[in-house]
Length: 130
Image 1 (cartoon, rainbow, N blue to C red):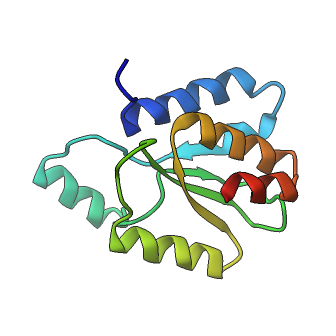
Image 2 (image 1 turned 45 degrees about the vertical axis):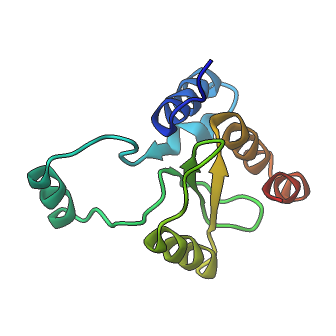
């Protein structure tokens, strides 16, 4: 079986979140950016004019936990895929300003990180991020 694409992994995360919202109501605030979708030049320009920022994270959870203001995930495939220079800067700036910005490989790992974050379990969260 082929490794899931970034888009497929992101869909997996949001399907899981939808099923868990009654248990973890904070998941209502989990949102996503466009990931793995080919856009025309015209659509890309419209997004940029409307405030889309190159390098911003794929997944955002606007809930304060573990001493951070929010959780921001740049999702990558389990193997392959690299952070762009813009993504590296974005993650660095998020962390500099009190948020948690991380690059995560694969949907299952992202789900574990989200769960630890929402449990406010900073020790487990830091272990998962190693």
